[in-house]
Amino acid sequence: MLNLIIGAVLFGTVLGGFDDPHFATGRYGLVHLFEWHWDTIADECETFLAPHNVGGVQISPPTENRIIADRPWWERYQPISYMLDTRSGNRDAFINMVQRCNNVGVRIYADIVINHMCGSGGTGTGTGGTYFDADTKSFPGVPYSSTDFNDLNCITGSGNIESYADPNQVRNCKLLGLVDLNQGTDYVRGKIIDFMNDLMSLGVAGFRVDATKHMWPGDLQIIYDNVNQLNSDVFGPGADPYIYQEVIDQGGEPITASDYSGIAPVTEFKYGKDLAANKNKLTYLSNVGPAWGMLPSDQALVFINNHDNQRGHGGGGDIVTFENPYDLKILTAYMLAYPYGIPRVMSSYYFDNADQGPPASQPSITEHGACGNGWVCEHRWVQIASMFEFSSVVQGTGMNDWFSSGTMNFAFSRGNKGFIAANKEGIMDEWIYTSMPDGSYCNIIHGHFHDGHCDGTCHVVEQGYINVVINADPNEDQVFAIHVDAPCDH
Image: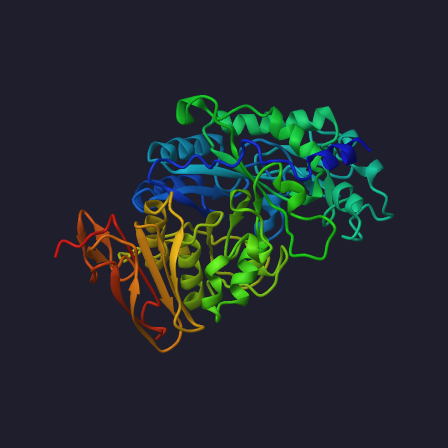
C-alpha cells in the first residue's frame, strides 16, 4: 500500500535534477555501443567519438551475469552480483575506459539492471566466478536472500506476470521468469544505491535503468533521491546523475511513461515507431514531440531503434533498422537535427537470430573507417557521424524555416547555425531560406570538414537562401546539411 501511495503522489510531479546529461562543451547525443568491450570503447572514444563531437556512450550492463548456453546477448540482463566483471571486461578495464573517455570529453552511461536478478532455477557461477543459487534465491555476491524478493507480493499462481492490464502484477511478479527484487525494502534499496554510488565514484555520468515499469515509481524516487552526486573531480560539485528510464509505452496499458517521467527522463518508445510509420511522409515531421502524444522534450530520450526492438522484442513494431540503411540514415539525420529529446544512436552487430550474442572478435576498422568482424557500427556511417557534429553546433537554437515541397522531402534551419534537408522521391531542386549568415559552407553529408578544410562540396548561402539539389537515388546521399562551424575555404 505504501508503494501505491508514494507512486500516486509522484505522478505529475515536476522533473527533478536527473535530466542533465552533463555533455562536455561542444558535444551532444549518445551512441549505444552494444556489447563492445571496455578497452574497445575507450579506443573509440579517443579516435572517433570525441573528434565527431559525440556526447556520450551507453554501455551494456557492467555487472556480473549468469552464463547462458550459446552466450546470447540477453545473458547480460541476468545479474548475479554487482561486481564489475563481464565479457566486456573486469573492474580495472572498466575504470580505465571511464577515465579515458572522460579525458576526451565523452561521457559513459551504464545500463543497470535493478528490477531483478537472473532467471528462476539452477545454480552456478557467474562471469566473475561468483556462486549463486536461483532455486533458493541466494546471491551471496551482493548478498541477497529469499527475503529480498517479491514472491509474497505477487498474486499470480505462476509467480510470473500473467496480465499487463494489472499494474500490481507488472511491478510485483517475475518478468519472463526473472527473480523479482523487492525495492520496497530499505535493504534492497540500499544495495542498489551502493551499486550506483560505486559506478558514479568511478566517473560515470548516469544510467539507463532497465525494466523501469516493472518497479514502483515511489521506490525508484527514494533510490534516486538517495544516491550520491557525480564525481566532483570530473563534473564539478553538486551534479546529479543523468537517469533515463526504460518504460515501454506504446499505448494500451495502464502503466504509462508519464507515471515515471516526473521522476527522471524516460525512453520515448513512440518516437522510433512513429517516425518509421511516416518514413514516406517526411513532410509531416515538422512538429514531432508532445503534439504527437510524446513526452515533453526534457523528459525524453529518443531513438530510431534499440537493441530490443530491432530483434522484435521490447514492444517490437514496424521500426527502421540497419537492414534498411536508406531510411535509417534519413531518420537518424532528422533525429540529430531536430530539437526534441536527447538522441541516442544504436550501434549494432549483424545477427541471424534474435538471441545471437556478439561476434567473437571486437570491431576491426577498415581504411575507410567502416567496421568489420560482423559489426555494423551505424554511428560510423558518414551520414550519421557528421550529424553528431551538426547537433553539437546548433545547441541552444530552435527549429525554424520549415520547408516542404512534397510528401517525401523536408528542410529546416536550427536558428542561424545550421540547415538540413532530405528528399526521398525524384530530384529535389529548390531555393530555400535558411536564416544562416551569407557565405560558403561544406555539405557535411557529402564530405568531411576537418582542419578547416572541406573535402566535399561547397554551397553558397546568399541573402539567406541556398539552392538545394538532392537526388533520391539510393546510390546517392538523400540528406544535405551545413552548419556555421564548417565554412568552405574556397
